[in-house]
Image 1 (tube, rainbow over the protein chains, first blue to last red):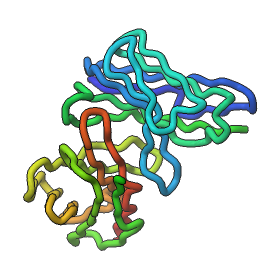
Image 2: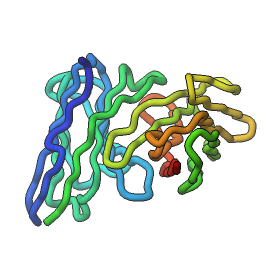
Image 3: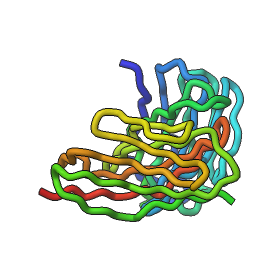
Length: 114
Length: 109
């Protein structure tokens, strides 16, 4: 079945540590996104990518980095510069970010600072 | 600016009908989506409206009025499994998608 796979589901980060969240899709979608969700707030865009080897900052990119070396993969690294990383992270994709299209989400990853 | 307003929480009874409203302030948008999100899970697509009017999809219907800056999601024959958050989402062009904070719906027996 086609879909978006995120891993790990739960992750704990120590102070000063970088962690990477994996996102893989087999929907053949060009566009991929990373969102952060905090309690009582709407999803906020961290980074997005329209095509391979291209990505752009979203609204809250500080302290995060991404890469898009393959169409299927869009990993997110939460760096030590992100001072409040505890949140629910959602990876998503759509056929083409330039057109109106349904966004499909992965199952999400919970990141907690310990 | 761009903003989406939804009620924070609603409660309804199993078998009943519930309407979740969404108002927004934006200079223009391509379409309005509704997503369902169970706690700790990913949002799943329910419906979208591009033109004014009602879109029906089984037990779920969504309505849009661009002139009034207003949309609603109508859920009929409520089931316990409908207890979830419902997100009103605007696509303002390409990758630009604005998510509302969501309305938590509690369905009671």
